[in-house]
Image (cartoon, rainbow, N blue to C red):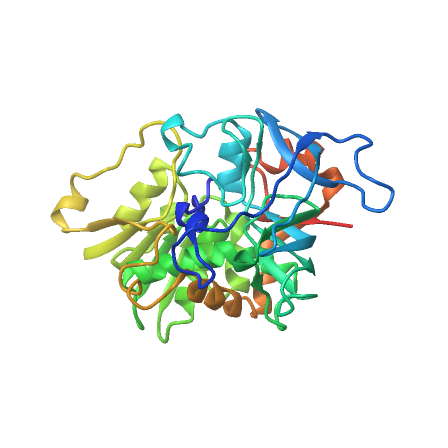
Length: 363
């Protein structure tokens, strides 16, 4: 199952206030296979690079921070399975190479490329306001790195660093909820119980009187849905006549299920990113006669209903605050040490791999 393409091109253009503008220089990093580089006082940083289909390695990185940057020692990072599966498989379409770039990516698609955007760590160097703080940064998997201080999002005191790796996923879900126009009392169906789908359902479930059902082919996701206070059904038992339907499975079958679940003049919000190829969509029959609306939601821009008033920084701060719910720990189903990550990539990113989010632990 593929989750949502969460990367937004606009991240590269944010100014210090979280609005779009020219970003300052961030870091200059050399890369080479890990060996004896570095000095006795400061060993080289290590970063995960995808170097061939489903093959990754740790490479040495020389971290050089600009005056307006922070230096962060990583505590945790998260594997975004849907997007990183496409990257690790070399399946990013050439026409999408620029749009698919992560904010602090190094290298070029297809390979070699340093990719990722869910890092949490402690600030070792930077502005006094951030010194010693735990921050979330849209950075690839790396044990020590530099980034613009404007991209260092402080993690609230009530959010554990491990849970904070979900911040980008929560932001994606929040934006989709805004795009949908969902409201209190609505009957809501989310097709695709991956991490983004579950987070979307969880946010909708906070609306008074809302009835939220997760739909997935994997019945093993039912306990996670229940832990978040959500109903669960397999596609053959999916509810009908929904007011709003979200689709996150990136499959033709999932899209058909979403359309079938929608009531008269309902809205289907397509959150999936499909990568290469053509995906059939059943736009005849029920879609036409029920006057359904199919819209796309992608996190690259703040939803139109909020855009005049909300900066990216405000949206991210809201996503961070939402992470104080301890039930969200149920979405992190595996921890792995950073040194063990390259060997585990084929297993973690396999098409039918069990579990949800893999948390990468740093020494």
